[in-house]
Image 1 (cartoon, protein in one colour):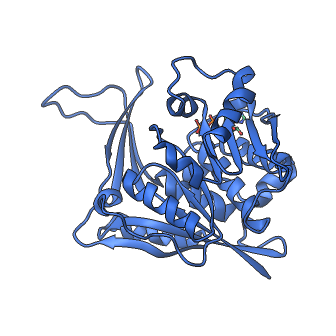
Image 2 (cartoon, rainbow, N blue to C red):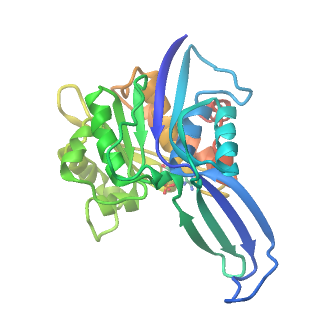
Length: 326
Ligand code: ADP
């Protein structure tokens, strides 16, 4: 069986979700409605999306190409860290590149949902995700064909390892979430850049929100800035738009419509979309198909399944939950 390998370099967080009728005042103790924990962080979510979209729900590998998924990141030497690693392994993810930080704490997001107002308040503690610091460390696994980055670990590590992955001949995917403007020279090291609409506005430093009609021009702008192969902007229920360089240097652009579905919770939609595309690239030998339309159809179908369920990681579908919808 042929093997493609995806490495996801990014964050691992435990979400602690408290639902309460209202937020207590200073000094007040309040009995709340419910408390749940869940594994998350954009890095871990995208690794799980890659692994699930390469496997059926029963763990079988449905076609001739097995995909190995490695998570690269850090957790604490605490209960959260141990449980996180076990959960990733259950999803067939190689965790040998997940560091345990001695005396460190796993990153957490304390999410307080105020039921009366419907407002969320989030207290984010990066913990082990930031323990690695800003001094450049080589994190790219040798065996990876495709390397996927987001922006929830120190920025300097992201920049250093994007350049390193490119130099090692890997296909580099960057999902700029959460967005911050990038150094101009970085674009030339990225094979595939994926943003949502608001991230696109931050990267192009535009005060005018992106409209679907603007996509052809905006997508081309990102390729002109240096993105090597494909730029994709996700458009929520409207799907996604891509611009891809052809072998003869022309640029092909296309809107690939999203799937109509009943929306319950969109939390992991973007992460599922990115994971789906990474799987397609890995299965295609470390590059996009010349016409990536079907790859985006698959990514929209996978992301549409994720919005039908509550939660982040819990909502990410397996391959056999997506294929009937293609
Ligand atoms: P993010 O979650 O990063 O903000 P988007 O909202 O653009 O990103 O969603 C990512 C992808 O998830 C979309 O490109 C689409 O495929 C899918 N998606 C999101 N919202 C919906 C929806 N309401 N109905 C169907 N698909 C959706």
